[in-house]
Length: 279
Image 1 (cartoon, rainbow, N blue to C red):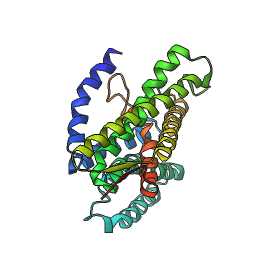
Image 2 (tube, helix red, strand yellow):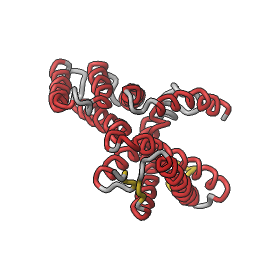
Image 3 (cartoon, helix red, strand yellow):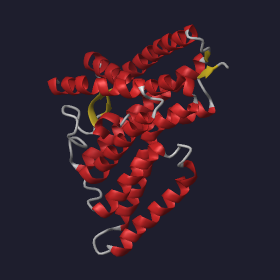
Image 4 (cartoon, rainbow, N blue to C red):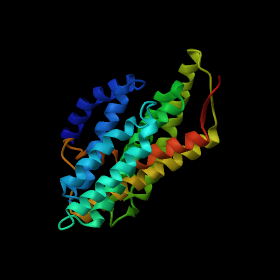
């Protein structure tokens, strides 16, 4: 516990700086570091893909994704994917004696899915620049507030296991506590944020029904992400994806819930915004 707290204390100022500079390239760079680390942990640290001929191109694509929507790079998105695919199959052709097709498929799938999911933190900020900071914080809040709520409620009242063969400590009571905590904290956060925005001349409108549905689904998806990460670790026989964050494990251990929440918020807000800026 002491290690977890110390790591959080060290990383909190970094997070604050990134949030303050969210409208600059700093956010893209921070997201790229997270994408590269997460892809490396899932491919290499699990033992799924031990070949650097596959891992290195995957890391390059992971680093590219958070920048892919920049005006200068948008026209090259499909070209990058095509070149990446050709490189992977070229590696299979050149090293077919030790590289298996399933490793190529795993590399392609993991690198694109993980990179897109985590890069959604950047993508969502481009949808509505006026409230980009709010949307970014909301993504993390859905994951981490619900996680904290589930922990304390589950520890106090948990009796019914949620997924005993996957994560024995998770309970149904904890899940309910996590959802309720997420709904309460995020609504209060939204109310305060929009009130401050209004005081500074930026008028917004909250759609309560959409908001509560979105937060509930996002929280559930966070649990799904966490459980799927646990499945991968159990199947690979590892406790954590990495050791880069003492007390927490690897980057993927800290961002596994974000994998589902970030793209969900991005897609949801793009098609059906729950907080709208009134121009």
